[in-house]
Length: 84
Image (cartoon, rainbow, N blue to C red):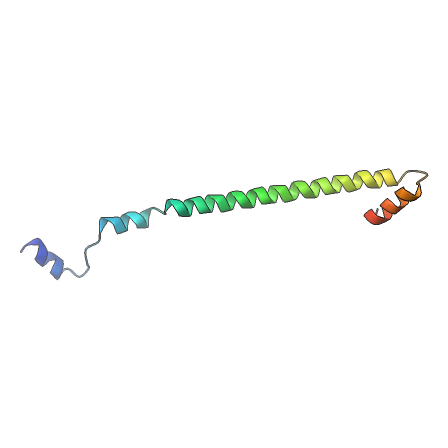
C-alpha cells in the first residue's frame, strides 16, 4: 500500500500546514485594529473626563466670582446663566 492509497482510504481529507498555522495565530491586521480601537476608547474616555473636570472647576470659579457681597449686574447675569 502506497501513500496514495492511504489518502483515498482515510476518512478525513489531509490538512494543509497553512490552514493549521492560520487557525492558531490571528492576523496582524486584526491585532492592529483591536489595539487601535482599545487605545482610541481609552483616550476618548480620558479626554471626556478631563473636559468634564475642567468645566466643573470653571463653573465653580465663576460662581465664586459671581457670589461677591455686592454683585454688579454683570455678575448677577453670569450667576443666572451658570445656574449658581
